[in-house]
Length: 121
Image 1 (cartoon, one colour):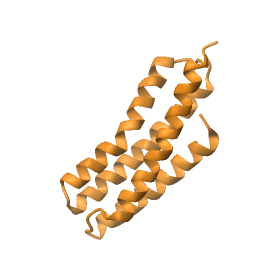
Image 2 (spheres, one colour):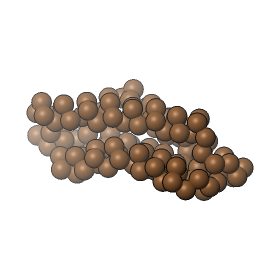
Image 3 (spheres, rainbow, N blue to C red):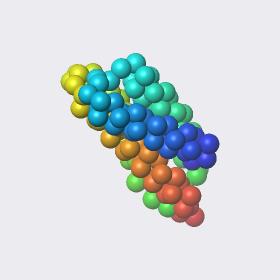
């Protein structure tokens, strides 16, 4: 994994988590800032996933390659799913759904980074 992208994903995920949780506590529905930050975070996720796929195709093999591939697929779909859910159900809890999605991206990114560093050799 690209270290600056990992830092960006964890930091951006934390920012989105806090923002979503605070706005849910204030009773607000998701606005442009929350959805824009989620979209920006998804772009960073996509860049990281493309880089990882190129590395895998190029021959890099982490110890649990299949698990890494499923994590890559999973982290790629989390934010679009939670944003779609938040747009379909416009309540204060929609911000919390986005916040939990951001927390999920943070956790999956950290775990992917751990697995990526262990090669199967």
